[in-house]
Image (cartoon, rainbow, N blue to C red; front, side, top):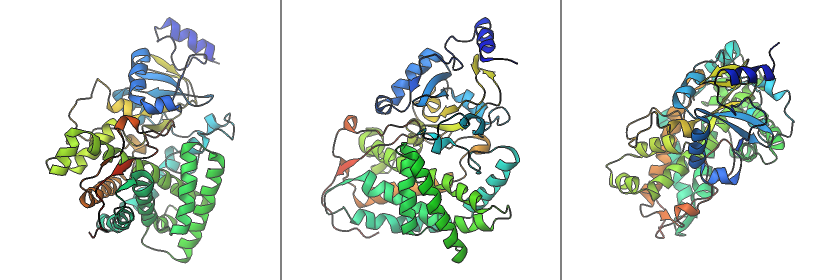
Amino acid sequence: MTTSRDLDRTANNSGVHHGSPIDHDIERVSLYSPEFASDPHAAYRDMRARYGSMAPVELAPGVSATLVLSYHTAVRIMHDPAHFPADPRAWQANVPTDCPVLPVLEWRPNAMRSTGEEHARYRQANTASIDAVDLHALHETVERIAVPLINAFCAAGSADLVSQYAFPLAFEAINAMLGCPPEIGQEVAAATRAVFDGVDAEEGNRLLVTALLRLLELKRAEPGQDITTRLLRHPAGLDDAEVIHQLVVLYGAGIEPLQNLIINTLVLILTDDRFGGDVLGGSLSTRDALDEVLFTDPPMANFSVTYPRQPILIDDVWLPAHQPVVISFAACNNDPAISGHDHSGNRSHLAWGAGPHACPARSAAYLIGQDAVDQLLDALPELRPAVPVHKLTWRPGPFHRALTALPVVFPETPPWQS
């Protein structure tokens, strides 16, 4: 039987980089520290210089992983589920239950965390339920949500766009698509935030499942034209646990990333002269700003986690079996091997993932993000940051790229009518 020591010896004899991710005693880069959150791009550049296409990292204290920094390597991995499956069960067997990233990474019976026939079954149910979303109606829904949110702070002349706009808008838009009433949605939102931030994540995970079970009971009693009802009725015949875990992904991939997409796009428009003047002046579209963010500061910066079935050599680095391999969308999109300075009209970024696990809801996400930005800038065209961009604080965490707050000021404005 081949051991880790044997592989290390093979690696040394074959010219593999010293300190490849298979070495257990190597210094690993912390992806959960405030220092990393404050300037991740500097960390990506340093990792690329030190390690090449893949770097040894920690997702949480004691949780080792390999971070993929190369665009081409990432595409290769994401299109190779046979060698890089998304099922984490072999890995999590040795992970403590109180591990802060376990609720994000643990196995669930859903499309994101399964492979083979199971993945195909869940993926079919998800894509059919999402593809049936009426995008025209969704546009009207976003407007209906955005106007009262803006009206709640427009007369004050200042606001925090994270807590007062992007988060409640993303939350209500996802609830609308899933047919979830506000009282259940509030529980889901609080639990989802706890899971992503790793703050009492185990309890957040429990509360999330409890809230979604209530949603299923409601949709059986009162079915509607929504994703939850379609999942319950899909020919795949998902049981309650399976439907709940599809919804966990839809909420997790909805509220947090969508909020971050809206906020990161607003930061770009409000602080970058290339976009502020052009977007508001009309020569560049909001969609261009969204794609620039998806290249440079994607809302989920590091994700699309897989677990090799056996030790595997890739880019002259041995990756150990059953250990997380994380795609850094942010680093890969800005890989010098492929990155240019002008991203206008270029949608080759990896922010939506790639291969069999690519995001099935990108059309809805684009629509919600674009409408959210447009509604706000139409209502408050003189919006500007209340503090310099370098004083904004980014939330620590290995996966997201998220501000704690985005304070803005603007002329006091009467309630807006669309």
